[in-house]
Length: 140
Length: 85
Image (cartoon, rainbow over all chains, first blue to last red; front, side):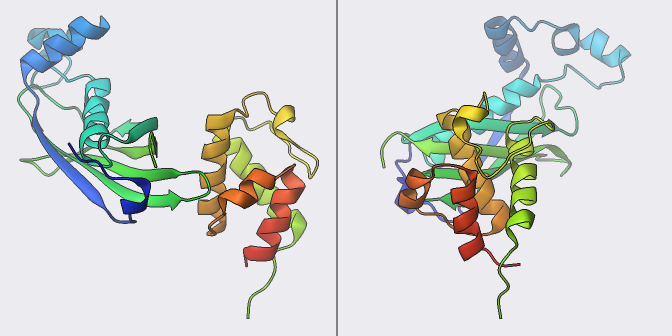
C-alpha cells in the first residue's frame, strides 16, 4: 500500500498492475452487481456471438483502475473522482491484462490529478481499454 | 514576443470547455455567469472545470486565485493576463 501525498506526484509518474482475469472473477463480479448477461456467464452464448470465451464485464476492468489508484498511485490517500473508459476490444476469461495509470496533469489550484489509463492484453499486445481517471486526496 | 488573447476569443474557448465539462452543448456563458446560473455546477464539477481550464489554456492557476473568482469575467481577467496565443 502506497501513501503518496499531493506533493509527491509528478507528471509522467506511473503504476502498473498485471491481472489474470479468471472465470471465478467474472462470476464474483456478476454476483455482486447482478449483471448476469449470458455474454459474461455462458461460454456457448459468447461463442455464438463470435467471442472465444466468456467476456469480462467492462466495469470489472474499471475496478482494476480503482485498485491501481487506491493502492498504488497515489495509494491510501486517494479520493477517486471520476473514471472515464473506452472499451476497445473484448477481454476474455483467462486473458492476462496489464493496466497502467500515468499522471498527465496536476492542478495545485484544485488539489487534483488527472491520469491517463490503459489496459493491454499481456500476450497479444492489443490495447483493450483506454481512458482517464481524476483523483484528489483525503489528506494533503 | 507573446500576444494577449482577446476577451471574446477566451469567452468562446471557455464556452467550449463548459459544454464539454457539463456535457451540455446548449450552455451559453457570459462574463456575468456564475455557479448559480448552471444547475450542475457543484464543488466536484468546479474542480473538474478548474483542471480542464488549466489544460486547455496551458496555464497553472493558484488556489487563492480560484477562491476569489466571482464570475466568468474574473476568470477571463486571469486568462487574459496569463494565457498567450
